Length: 157
Image (tube, rainbow, N blue to C red):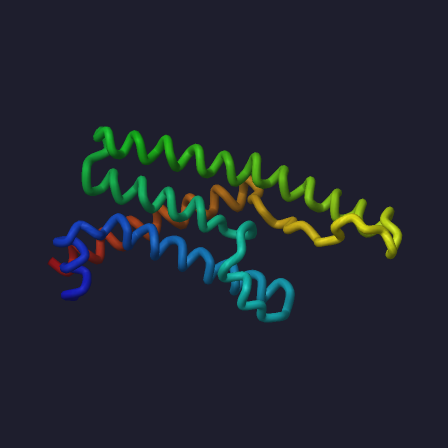
């Protein structure tokens, strides 16, 4: 495949792996949502949260691609693993808790404010983070995408 040979020769394999992992995870999220809710919602493609974590898929695809290209003991791979770990901990920790707080605040606004009250009644986004399982599945997906892309590139040479 000339397209894959061009990706390898121009050094864009890592970026392509990140993009492919992210987009495919978002599409998987849309399919999962559509099956579960029995309704199609195109905005899921651009949303945060849900199964699988596209953030985790992206950063693990990046780290895996760097490991495959630069070597598993390279400084670049070590930096990528540290970055991936920070992103995944943030997705499952801080952002997950912020989403839980948004649920409570939305409930307070709904139940305790009278209709004529002047406080901002805008509903907060509740799905911000991920469960640990969503992060792990996303991470696994990123690794698979990166390995498959590398295999395709090597087969096309």
